[in-house]
Length: 610
Image 1 (cartoon, rainbow, N blue to C red):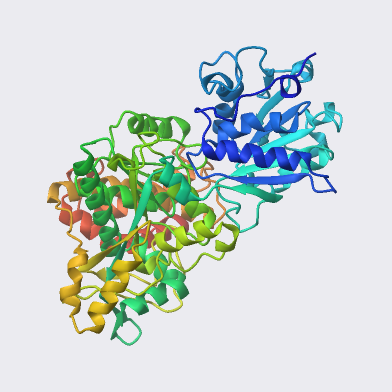
Image 2: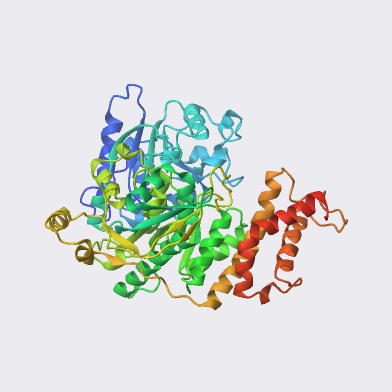
C-alpha cells in the first residue's frame, strides 16, 4: 500500500493558503525529524488561538514521513474538528482547501469512536484520530490491547499541555518508539505543570496580531481611588489606597473572591464590560458582538447573569451541572445571536469558536496564566481574516485592580520574550493615580469566618463603591506617552489635569422592573444550589428519601428545597405558587435574610419542627 505521507510531495513554500506560522512550524518539524534522536523523541509547538494549529497538525506527518500517525485530542469536540481536516469527503479537508495536495490519493483516515471502527480499519489507515477518553485504561484498554507497540511511529497531541497527565503518559509508554509532538496555545497546564517535550517553535502573539490572525487586544482595569474597611470585630473604619487594594488582592483570597462576588464591585465590572461592548458595537456597526464572562461556580453564574439582565442585556450561562439539552439551548441562542452575554465556568474552553465574542469580563479567580490564556483566547478569534487594522477585529479584557490578575503569574518564563511583554502589558503592574475621587468604597471583613463554596464568602463583603476610574492598557504600549505623563506630573500638573487621558466609569442605567426580574430568576437558582450543597456537605444522597418523614415519595433534594421555599414564602407572607408576584422590595428582604431562612429550614428538616 502506498503511503502519501512518504510518497507524495506537498505544496508548502509559496503556497498563499499556508499561513506563516504553519510554514515556519513545519520547517521546525522537518529539522527536528532529521536530528539524531539521542533518546529525545518529544517536541512542542506553541501557536496562539486562530493561527492554524489544526492545519499544522495535518501537515506534521509529512514532516516525519510517518508510516502511521495517531492524533489525540483532549475531548470529543476537538477530535471532531480534527477529523474534518483529514476527511477526503469533506470539502473543508485541509489538504484540499489549502491546496497542499493536487488531488488523490490522500492519507487514509480512521476515527476511533465507540464501536464504529474495528482493528482492520486501523490497520488500513495512515492516520487515526480520536479523543483521549477512548484510549484510557492503559494496557487494559480494548484498543491498546489489540495494538503492537510499533503500531504508530508518530503521535500528535492537540492541546498538548494536557500531555503530562497520567492517561496521556500511559499512551506514550504503550508506543515507546513513536515520535511525539505536542501542540498548544500555552505550554502550561491549569495546575502549573509544564508541557512535556522541547518546544521547537513558538509563534509570538505580537506577530499574530500584526498579521491579522488574531484580534488586537487591550485591557481595561477598574481602579478605585480608595476602599474603606469596616472591621466588624471593633467597628473600626480604615481607608486604604489603590496600592493597598492591589496588595490585598495579592495576599487575601477572600478579598479576591469578594471583588468578583460582592454586588457593588461585581456591578462595576459588569458596567465596564457593557460600556466596552457598546463602544465596539458603535465603532464597528456590528450588533452581533458579545461579552463572555468567567464565573466561580454555578450560583455565581446565576448572580452574574442576573447583573447583566438587570441592566437590560440578554444573558445566559452554561455549566457542567446543567444537562446537555439545557446547555445546547443556550449555545443555539449564542450561535443565532439571540443573547448579548454568555457566562461560564471554564466550560467554553479548548476548541470553542465564536469570533463575535469581543469583550472578556474577568469575574473569576485565575491562579496561573494557562487557564487565563484559555479564557482570553475566546475573544481572540478574528471576524475578518487577515485584516489587522479593522475595528471589528479588536477585543477587550475587563478586570478589577483588586482581583489579583496582574501579579499572580509565575509562568512568564515559559513564553517567548515577546509574549512575556504582551501579557505584562495586558495585565499591568505599574502604578496608576486616577483622578481625585470623592466617593469611598466599603467592605467588611469578618475574621476567621469560613468561605462558602457557593461564591458568597462570609468574611468580606464590599458594601459600596463609587467613582471608579477605567485605565486602558493597549496591547502595543506607548512608552513615549507614558514618559510624557510622568514628565507632566514632575512639572507640577495635577492629577485632575492629567486624568483627561482616562475616562470615568458610568453605571449602566437599569430599571426597577429589570432589577426585580433578575432577582426573581436568581432566587430559584440560589435555593436549588444551596439545597444541593447542603446535602453534599452532609454526604446525603439528593435522590434518596430518608428525609421524607411524611412519606410523600419526595427525594431528599425536594424535601430540603421545599423547606427553604416555605421559609422564604413565610418571611414575606406569601403562599405557594405566588413567587411570581414578589416585589423588588420583598426580593431584597429575602436576599438580606437568606442565610437565616436557610438555617431555619435546616433546623426543621434535620431536627424537627420547634
